Length: 262
Image (tube, rainbow, N blue to C red; front, top):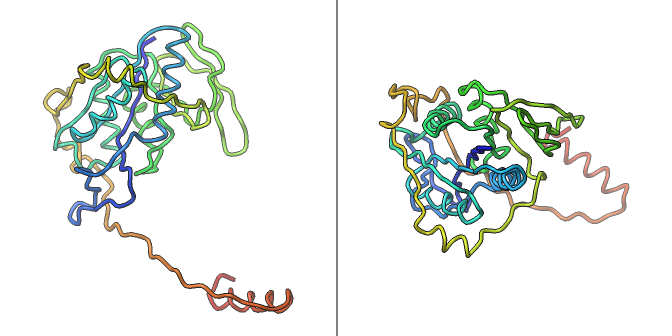
């Protein structure tokens, strides 16, 4: 089975600057890590490969420093890696990101299964995976918490819905986004680090993609624009009250009315 995992490099710190003009995060030179949710997707792919055979590829989009997360994926057991990197991809919202990655997937040949983490810790939209599937014309299921069975042409999975756990069968090729409880990710292997330190990572730029319409990528291809990003206000004010239970209840009720919470 040919499995592709979408991974992303995200800031490893909350101290990230924002470009005042474009409103996007300045990622260059920032301490980064693999998106935690993508670790579960990668672990799922590796376990499926161990069970039914095949290979695991990873794809990411970002500046050249994102090569580090592909190297980390190699240390966990991935077989191949591709990075989409070009200035024209910068500032993409979820729609442009999904489209760009879908174009990259087309350059990688046929795949049976695409796995994504539920969401990323920097964007938190949980939209890129399903939007990719739509661009690729694939069936897809989100919020997968368990792989029940893998058949020749399909697989049966459990998905965590708001009020129920649902079971569905989906045919290959397909895309799944997985929850963090599906498997416990393994740690990177030092032995694999040594084995794969010179392993090739293919870098795809805009000119290698099939669609050469620049209005589909980056800021040009993003229908949503960030008007303003700002850190949340920090309020350290506090009051300590003493009194009986009845006195404190009455005082709390008055305070909540003053703050217009009730």
